[in-house]
Length: 403
Image 1 (spheres, helix red, strand yellow):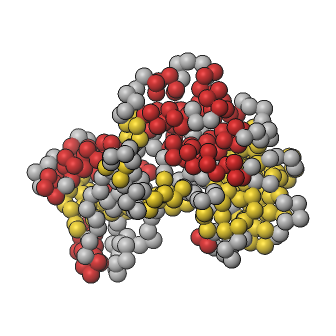
Image 2 (cartoon, rainbow, N blue to C red):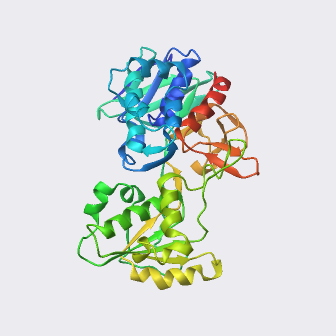
Image 3 (cartoon, rainbow, N blue to C red):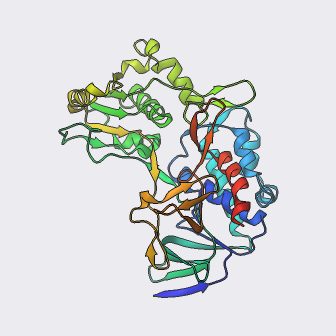
């Protein structure tokens, strides 16, 4: 059964993670008075469901700046009954990092406040399709409700996708290598970053060799958690760490900017890497008792190295980055915007999209880890700006262009 809810929304925001909350706050700040908000659970997004146990790489002060970035969110912060996530965060050292559960609780409190606003109409479900009609200059958006007997259709001139990303995986057990290892089991990166469930997934007394592929911030966090298990409850764990590049750290520079701000190691991951994983430290470090590092920087030997070492592994963790979550079917005047989702080109300059002909898609916008701002530092390094405050800063710049 399908029911028509309203044709009068000024915007539809899809997703209720940190970017969705920031997008909604900015649209309210600009005076939009009727906004549809779509999410299956409205419970803080993946940062809450997957990453509460992860040590952040962001100073507490930046989380606070995110939560107070626009007046509608400041109102929530000032009126939420204490103690709350904001009052707890205020007591933390503002110049240090913190566990992401503090940030997740903050997003949940902001979400609760936004859901109480009369300008916001929440819909629990998932957007399955959206069609832009040139004649009406509006998107018609279909929502699969959490109620199995109800589908919903809404309309708005603006559709904002804050749909998030998930860890990349690979279809084969080795990246680009011939052959396979049938017994190799993939450990999802989300699981490895959540120690409370990781300990139950791995056998305690059976020799277990885990391949960790990658040298990113997530890879170092994964190694930290696995080494911790090896030192405590799972003494039979051993790691083979496959990495192509030297460890890279964020560096605070004169003038207040950060070299490798979005790609370099920070916080606990950086400290662990410097003290235990650098080549000069690994052999004699505690972590080195459990880790064999395999340097795959020579691409001519990479496949051979995987073929040699992977058969000795029972599990594999891919820490090779994140990819966009699946988007709804997008069309214009009934015709698909692109033949493949990857052909939908993101343009962070104005926070919008181009179709496969290079034309701007009217009223379609994005934000968050799936659609971050491209930034260039003073040394010319091009990076994707990912982080709560970075999402807020980006949206403060581009939402006036949408409205």
